[in-house]
Length: 381
Ligand code: FES
Ligand SMILES: [Fe+2]
Image (tube, rainbow, N blue to C red; front, side):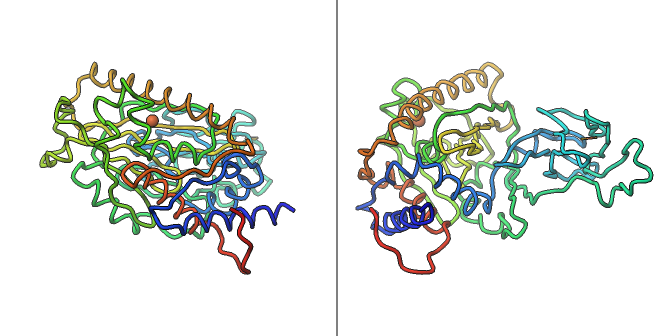
């Protein structure tokens, strides 16, 4: 029963993803509310993909760490003695107690249960009273997950067989290059739970259609819907430019040589599937969306700035603005999530490409990412 339902939904997704852009329309509500489809997505798509965890300069010095969660894995992100960033399992190798919480800096990770101790690279250093048990650094060090640093972001993939990430990000790298994202420094990070499906936040962040309506006082003065333009996309990402009106004040110079037109817009991108970010001259805001259940996500977001151009007061103002924008979006998404299980949930038309073309790109990504059918299936739109 469940398999037949999933097959039919996948066929619907493929059909929607293959529509020409001017006929594009939304996924039906069940894609955002069906718990079986969520479980299927996690196992067949999300656990095979690269996910952003945070910024490398959050853990600038050896021994700096933070803890985060990706699906059923509890992760310890740490900078080792050798200066390398590692993503380790945050479970003690004795009986599975989570080792660390939150963030901090330490010489060794000591389990709170029976005091096994691990070094900064996850190597077992000490296991009290275990001398005759064959416990050693060879068999009881913390396992590590695949990780990569790109443009100052830390990415992780739970699938040991996954293809590397950075090698396929040439086009996105070119789009962002003049901003020099690798040189942005972390200002603040936040973590919160939203009651929405993970795809709803991706779609919301990536479409300009709602900007002037949902954010009349916060975003409309700087990034009105009418000036937004679809930008580059490829198999790994989609993007749009939120252009500032001539009347808007400068938001800073940013990196040396950053052209005027790039200084006067924010570039919003979705690195498929779960990173959404806004790159501007002096501010880089990135969200790591971590799906928890079909209607719940953990959002870990970071704000970084370029150089010292923005004063502390200006940074606090920007943080307050983003908090308010998030509140406005969250209110809409949480309301919509409750409604989407209706049998009348629509599969409405998407707006023209400058306003919702990024959602069409996202659907085409999803259509590529699901396992391809071995046998032809019936349509189910
Ligand atoms: S569970 Fe960590 S030392 Fe026992
Ligand atoms: Fe928004």
